[in-house]
Length: 102
Image (tube, rainbow, N blue to C red; front, side):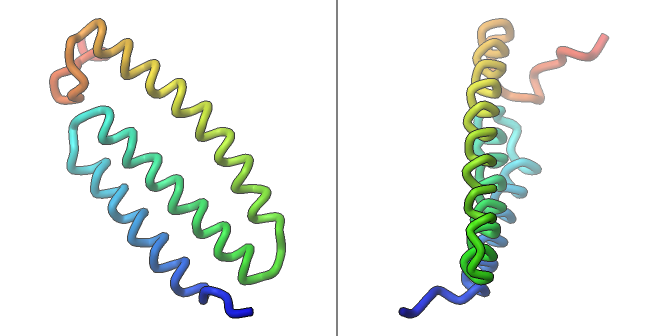
C-alpha cells in the first residue's frame, strides 16, 4: 500500500500555517483573524497526523482529537466574545475597538 510522503504533509502544513499567519498580521476584522488562528491550528494538526503516519504510531492522531476538542471549546468562547463585542461596539474591526484604553 502506497502512502503519502511526509514531505507533502509538511509542505501543505507550512503553506496553511503561513496563510493563517498572514491573515492574523494583515487583517483587522476579528472574524477573519479568528478563522486565521483556526487555520494555523489545523496546520499543526496536519503536521501531527503526518508524523504519526510516518512513524506508524497512533498517539499523534489521538493528540489531534484532544486538540480538536479544545479548539471546539475555543471556537465557542471566541465567537461569543466577538458577538459581545459587536453588540456593544457595533463593529468587529480591532482598529475601531479600544476597550482597554483610557
